[in-house]
Amino acid sequence: MGNRTIVPFGPQHPVLPEPIHLDLVLEDEKVIEAIPKIGYIHRGLESLAKKRDFNDYVYVVERTCGICSFMHGMGYVESVERIFDVEIPDRAKYLRTIWAEMSRIHSHLLWLGLLADAFGFEALFYQCWRMREQILDMFEESTGGRVIFSVNKIGGVLKDMPHEMLLKFVNNLNGMEKELRALTDVFLNDYTVQSRLRGVGILTKEQAVTLGAVGPMMRASGIELDTRKLGYAAYGDLSFDIITSKDCDSYARCEVRIGEIFQAFDIIRQAVSKIPEGELITPVKGNPPVGEAFMRVEQPRGEAIYYSRSDGSKFLERMRIRTPTFANLSPLLETLKNAELADVPLLILTIDPCISCTER
Amino acid sequence: MREKYVLVDLTPDLVPLKVLKAKQAGARLVQMCCANTEDGYDLLYSFADGYHFVNYKIHLLKDEEIVSISNIYPSASLYENEMSELFGVNVSYIGLDYRNELYNIDTVTPFRPEEKEDGE
Image (cartoon, rainbow over all chains, first blue to last red; front, top):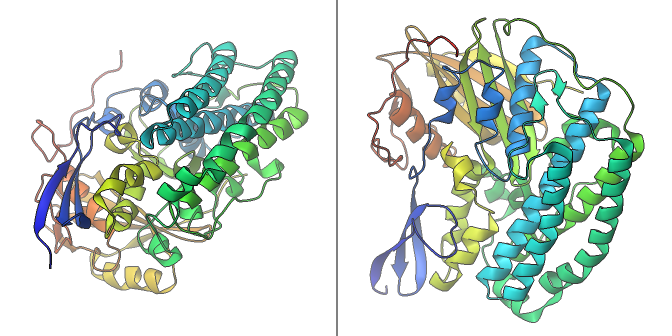
């Protein structure tokens, strides 16, 4: 047995844009165990539900995270819509789907940029983030915001996208898709990238189930599961396959996310071709009735759970958000076991951690 | 289209058996959470076998104890630490027990149910 040492990793680390701490128990350069510590930016957003009108709380919940802000808002309003038992207009469902898929492209491009930066490909990082800017521009044009959109409301959406705008967006995405092929070829075929990602951070199918992995982390372990297939928003009307990989390593996670970007382009194109005319919102009056509801949403990082419970007043009795990164922490700890110390930053990145989400 | 899911009540003594059955059936632990009630807590344990989503609601009195399921699902440790630290749920035998120090926060925990304030 080699010398055992404990190396503190984080909360401040160049690879981590947000704070999380890991105590890495090392034997020479090999990680034997990793013990996480969170709570550096805990904001008590769930607790705020008891003090904010349920209509206003959507503005709180979308501040859970700056990358999945739209999806957080959508998950919350859909859980409350279940309590009200209200059906939203079809056009609103399609608009939610389009914005959700734009969020997925923007989140995965951000992650690809961070990954490129972590293994020293600065130019690739710039290119990924430059492309991501185009999505942010589209968000700004359609919602008025680049990070927080505030377009979700219980009963539907607050803003529409005119037909000309949708066609322009599809045109932009077609251009982006061509450009992105060249970039993603580097991630998928470059020798250096492969040497850092292939065979590193293995999470088997069985481990992924037992440890509750979600999203690309789970699908990269060969599990064909995507919450969008449940058919919320307009996903039930659209055709798409679940992108998986059987390699179970860091490269597989990268491959799945890249596949999901191209899939998102296609889903948006389908949604634009099928979006019906009509109302944006079904008026919802009064307080939510006594009741409770779960809602599952497939965020870029994986399945997020929203649980709302109402006692009939304008304040929710309980609002729970189980974010994908929280679920992926246990699988991360498993992938760190027996990893080389030098691989730890990349392994942490491959779960696409969002600490803001985890802390809530 | 709305997802149809199962939500059933469960007594605390049946939790280990149900969880073990879920594990044997190949279900994954989706989430665990807690809500304050007048006399204690409602614990919600969610499992998914493929797309089949099952939730157990366990009512626990304030001074009652619930046994950890982290020996069955290791990922339960983080959820149980959260319930214990932020809500004060008495969970015994947690696999990785942070002893109320999972969250690095100044506020005194567990949080107590508060009186609702009037809206703005």
